[in-house]
Amino acid sequence: MIIRAARPQDFEAWLALWHGYNAFYGREGETALPHPITKGSWARFLDPLEPMHCFVAERDGVLLGLAHIVLHRSTILLGPTCYLQDLFTAPEARGQGVGRALIEAVYAFADERAIGRVYWVTQASNAAGRALYDKVAEHPGVIVYRRVQG
Image (cartoon, rainbow, N blue to C red; front, side, top):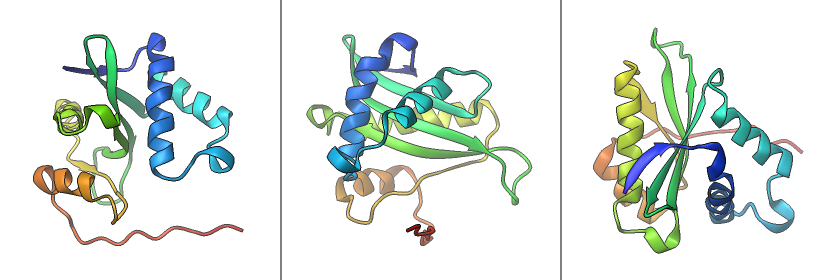
């Protein structure tokens, strides 16, 4: 298995993973993300001037997982911070180290750029994901709030 940056020709395989990720979080059917958001995100991943990046896990020419990161400024660090916004492993590839390899690739990316902080959030109910995250990161006890529009 290799972890690498997404390439333009990965779009269809990435899209299948992206749909799986969104379905996991209930964004499918009537609640699916609008196509312009998906296309816009993909374009940002491929634009070297954007602070968004996409990594994919590949084995034998098949994409098994994805990780999307966003680099941003912070009021508590001089250098950038890395937000691991999305992490997903195809159901048939779970338990094979794909998620861990993607996280380690994000860590390596951050280390190469002297980015001191990598963080992410997940659903409290994501037991399988949290079992991995507890092995590769600390849980700082933060509670996330967000604005409800409507």
